[in-house]
Length: 184
Image (cartoon, rainbow, N blue to C red; front, top):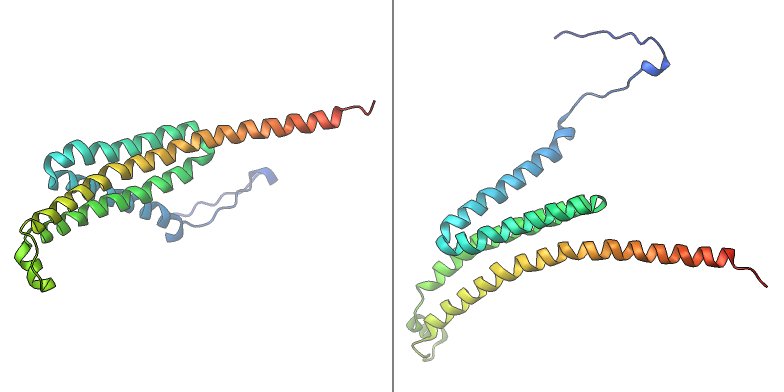
């Protein structure tokens, strides 16, 4: 359209710029798409699992993002790594919870007679319900221990950061002691 000509008045007024291309926007668009995927699947999981989603899955993801936000504020040097870690883990978490619902619904219709026919031997009548109970227990473990693991890993960075700071201070003090120590 309109091209403005700028004539610099001096050497300090010269500004070099490049045209904006897809390469500049690509990482931002991909990040937004990943976060939209996480939020969309998170909302779906909450609705699909009813009270389990409302009382377990919703707070779990919210706590992971909240802890990552607070630790990111405390440790600005590790902010990018924390954001990447939480983004990857949460995307995997909501995806696994999403797929797990279909696994449970597929196995829920299997009876002890079906297992007996598949293994060509007689099995107790409680086998079908035992497997569904085992899958529900596995869901509890995945839904609760996954976020606990991630929150612990994020909070562990605080101790590592300040531990590294104390270690650097101790090394600096030892170096100062050696350099100022007199031979007599």
